[in-house]
Amino acid sequence: MPTVTFVSIDGSRHTADARVGESVMAAAVRNGVPGIIGECGGNASCATCHVYVGEDFMPLVGPPGDLEDDMLDLAVSDRRPTSRLSCQISVTDALNGLAVETPKEQP
Amino acid sequence: MTGGVLVVGASQAGVQLGASLREHGYDGPVTLVGAEPQPPYQRPPLSKAYLGGAADSASLELRDQAFYANRRIDLLPAERVTHIGRGTALTDQGRVLDFDHLALTVGARARRLTVPGSDLTGVCYLRDLADAALLRRHLTRARHVVVVGGGFIGLEVAAVARSDGRSVTVVEAAPRLMARAVAPTVSEFYRHAHARRGTEVLLGAQLTRIDGEHGRVAGVSLADGTRLPADLVVAGVGVVPRTELAEQLGLACDGGIVVDEFARTSDPSIVAAGDCTVMPNPVTGEGRVRLESMPNAIAQARVAAATLIGKARPYADVPWFWSDQYDLKLQIAGVADGYDQVVVRGEPESEAFSALYYRGGELLAVNAVNRTADYLVVRKALASRTPLPADRAAHADVPLKDLLVATPAP
Ligand SMILES: Cc1cc2nc3c(=O)[nH]c(=O)nc-3n(C[C@H](O)[C@H](O)[C@H](O)COP(=O)(O)OP(=O)(O)OC[C@H]3O[C@@H](n4cnc5c(N)ncnc54)[C@H](O)[C@@H]3O)c2cc1C
Ligand code: FES
Image (tube, rainbow over all chains, first blue to last red; front, top):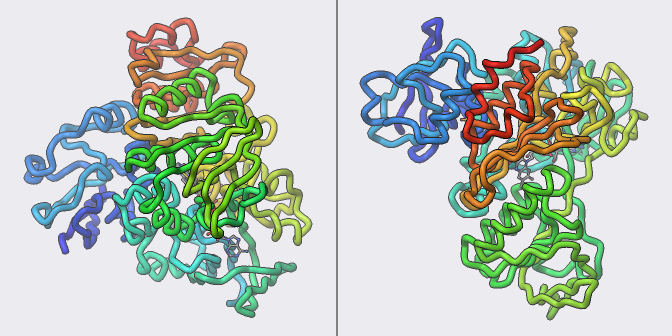
């Protein structure tokens, strides 16, 4: 099972087992990882699953889609080049070991 | 169990309430009783990804088992609370649960059809996972699907069935679709959008009977004499909030359990949250609204938890909602009740537009179709009480977010 590690602003780390095919948000929420809320259940409507993708995984994860781009533009407090909505990142075996940072606050 | 908080109803609101109690540092016992057999799950995908076969039931689970264990939330599934008195509740398993504090998060049930033939095999509803599993099985074999009710759930089911290649007719008694939630322009747009994709939409149409053959659905009859062939009838005709326990307790109910902006019922020691409640319109503070949505269930549960531990803070979230029908993403923020002006941005024909609602010049709500940016800006504007003047919002080529900075709150 691939694992995803969530690093919060204070440096604490939570590693979650993720199922291939589910989203990174879903893996976090199921496991009760703090800092990821996922209020809309992965519908790209709430932006409470915002993460910063670790630099080394950026090429694999890729850029946001158009709708997600609007969300990141308008709904998150501190957008960076590595910003993604974790509900829009699908877990694959290739993403095993993915590390993402959670923002200071979710909207 | 002795003392602590008893949460009745283990779904979106109940789970959030339990989790929020722990986030606030509440240390007493938390018991979460749920009548459904499976652990708490998300309902929105039932009419979307799950029905379409893109998601299985395991993926709908709200939280892992470990989540409840780690937070010492005692989850009792497949158990229904049947009686509540002062400080003690009884379940259908004969269990007695004592509590110091009570929270009702019992949700709502699907309203049933009452016309002759409503008990035929092939008449389906969609409220819980059991309904959805049954509907999915029927849908794989159906050819002619009649959806009764042109609200969100009916239309989402129609979209999935049509995308799956079924012949689909939507029968709506009101003169327009989603009449309670969107403006006439948006209703009209959805009627055309469904028609363009091959779904027939009948408005002002009254179902009078479901016709059967050998105990199974064979068609439906309408008041004007129309008969439609059908092997599956799906009813999405609204929900009825579960108020039985509240009534037992003598709590005020009015189309839902009446709560204030602190999620307190008419007995201030008892809180309630989610689909079972009616509360003051959070945007205007007036009247009573029932918000049947996941964001509301979560927001209200948080408020209720804070109230229970004595850190009461009023409900301050801007209500929002979404609905997916085909490739059309509808996003709603605010409550449009009582609007007197609608500004439409963009061309509905292009399948990307938004409708902004005003009352006396004051912004109330937005319906955005494939126009996430407009939805987000209005949500922000409502939260920060920033006016977005209607005359300026009407210029669709000016990004709404420009108004957000240009017109600071007075
Ligand atoms: C098909 C469908 C699609 C939806 N789509 C969307 C959407 O796209 N966006 C959105 O925001 N919302 C959507 N919703 C609405 C959303 O799911 C609800 O608003 C939300 O589930 C409300 O949560 P709740 O906890 O208040 O109530 P419910 O989810 O109704 O849960 C109440 C629970 O309490 C249990 N219960 C009741 N009485 C007792 C008792 N006496 N003892 C023990 N347990 C009891 C019930 O069995 C139930 O499990 C949808 C709903 C459905 C059905
Ligand atoms: S969970 Fe809502 S946007 Fe990702």
